[in-house]
Image (cartoon, rainbow, N blue to C red):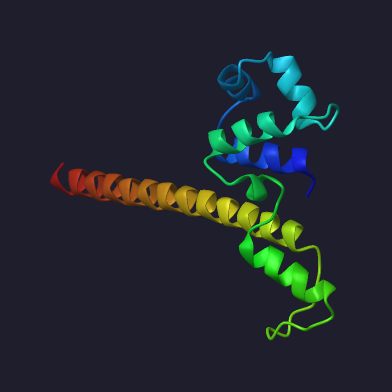
Amino acid sequence: MLLHDNMRFFRQAKNWTQEDIASKLNISPHAYGRIERGETDVDLSKLMKIADLFEIRLAELFGFDVKNILNFGAYNSGTQTNNNQTHCNISACTAECTELKIKYEKQQILLEQQNKQIELLNEMIALMKANRLTS
């Protein structure tokens, strides 16, 4: 994923709007939107502020973490890692994994809500049956 894609991902993970981030950065929502769409370059100090807002390291904003950097270095130096995995764009895989994890967690919440609704419906059915028997 590209930097601006990562910014959008982290913003959405926090359930923040572009206006929320713009306000925290003291810039207009239009200016932040242009940054997130990759239409404008951003200086390093602004990127550091953005990473701080997301409570992540700057390297994570770029899609790198220590594991990715080590794997990237091992791959580029010609040494194989001992995990028998096919090498690919590691930052994209990490971001995709995080995105899938968030989707999974949302699905779990929906499933819990559905289970609660089923329990309530079963209780209503039981009460209706009991009421019918006593009538």
